[in-house]
Amino acid sequence: MQDTSKQYDAVVAKCRALFVNKMSDYGSAWRILRLPSLTDQIFIKAQRIRSLQQNAVRKVDEGEVSEFIGIINYCIMALIQLEKGVVEQPDMNTDEAAQLYDEKIALTKQLMMNKNHDYGEAWRDMRVSSLTDLILQKLLRVKQIEDNAGKTIVSEGIDANYQDMINYAVFAMIHLGEGE
Image 1 (cartoon, rainbow, N blue to C red):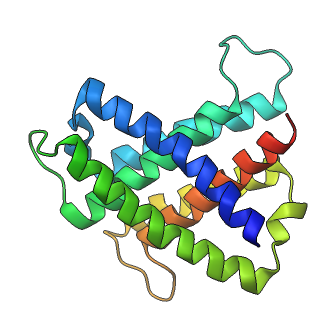
Image 2: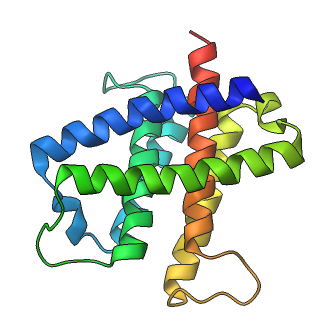
């Protein structure tokens, strides 16, 4: 499992670097997005990945990796929005956003390590397409929870679903990196 931790950190470092660079370019404009908007952005990314996996012809020269990075970063934004709430104007500098990013990813990685221990790294035998389908399933669950005003009866909340999507996307990127 030591390899998993190192591989996870390498994927996250790549995602975080892009997040910080985009914060430098755009500021925290994403802070105005409501959760359903972030969920829809993640959904678009996951749908594109699924289309790339199913279609032989690509009309845009970007592969799955950039979309998985987008899923990870939008999920982190959603977790931050869950904690901080939506604002009317950008209100966060790059250092504050990066600190919150690190906090959310640390909690998400710990969840992965706990589940990875219990499941015996079963994800290593999964296909990237299956991980994509699981992300889409989680998105549909989140949409339903959002439609239920955030309430669940016996199920995990929205935050746990975003964390699972991050972890599935990291696993997919590890698989895709090993294929290179």
